[in-house]
Image 1 (cartoon, rainbow, N blue to C red):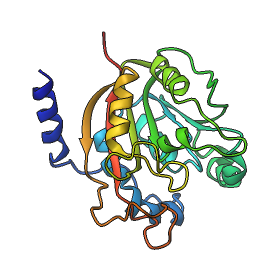
Image 2 (cartoon, rainbow, N blue to C red):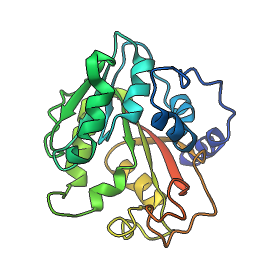
Image 3 (tube, rainbow, N blue to C red):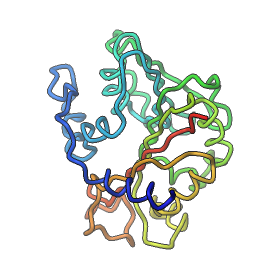
Amino acid sequence: MRLIISTLMLALCHLPLAACELALDAANRSLADKKRDTVSLPCSMAKLLPLQPGNVVLDLLGGNGYFSELLSQQVGSSGKVYLHNNKAYLPYVDKQLQQRLAQGRLPNVMRLEAELEDLGISPNSLDAVYFIMGYHDMYHVAEGWKINPQQLMAQIYAALTPGGRMLVVDHNASAGSGIDASQELHRIEANYVQQELQQFGFNLIMVSDVLQNPDDDYSKSVFDESIRGKTDRFVLLLQKPIN
C-alpha cells in the first residue's frame, strides 16, 4: 500500500494544472505583490490546495499578508483568513499590514497576533493552513525567537478539521543535511520535513516540483543576492487524517 501511495504522489507532481482563477491583475493589488507573483506562483499554490467559499484558513507566520490577500479571494465573503504573525516579526511587517488592511479592504482577513507556543485557535476550526517559507524558522534561534516544533505542529494538527490540509513551502537544503542549514542559510532539507510531518501525524498526499530550481547553490544563504528569489523550493501538501 505504501508503494502505491508513493507512486500516486509522484504522478500527481506532474499532472497538468487547470487555469488560474485568482484575480492577479486586480487594480487594487499592489505592484509589489504583482511582482512577487512571478516568484511565488500563487496560481500554482491555489491549484495544489483548492479552497471553497466559506472555508477558514490560517496563514501561519504570514508576514506582510501577500498570500492572505489571495486566500481572501478564494474563501469569499462567507469565509475567513487568519493572518498570523508573532511579536518578534511584527516590527518588520506592521506598516505593510496596515496598508494592506486599511479601510477594511479585506474584510474577511483577520489579524492574528499570537506567540507560537499558544496560537489560541479552537480545535477542528480550520479547513486549511498555509505555511510558506517558515518551516526552517522552527529550527532557527535568535534573540526573542525560539520555537518548539512539536508544540507548534501539535496546535496546527488540533486546529485543522479532520481532512483539513496544510501547504508547506520552503527553501530546500542539500540531501542528508536535515536542519543543519536552518540557522545560517535559512534552508531545510525537503526529505527531513516530509518525514517529520508524518511523525507529527499528518499524511503526505502530494509533493510538487513547481518551484524547483536544480541550479540553486545550497551552500549559499537564501538572502544572497545571486540566488535571492531563485532558490530551489519544495512544496508539500499534507492532510490531517479523516479518521
